[in-house]
Length: 66
Image (cartoon, rainbow, N blue to C red):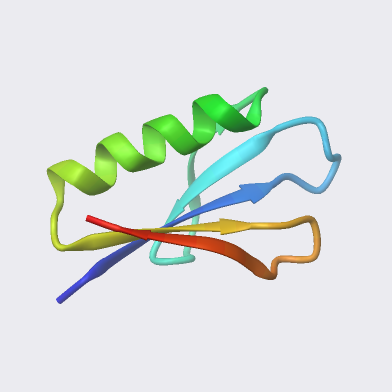
């Protein structure tokens, strides 16, 4: 089963969360690049998996598979 990790902006628009299987946020980052980098690191360790990068409206902007 493919695990899914999402990078989403928080409600205050001042940071980014990593969510596992779109349930609860696990990590908070002040900048987008750090959040994506950490999500990719987690996904690579838990292959097969994918990282979904969402915009401010929670629409998928990019999907990366590992």
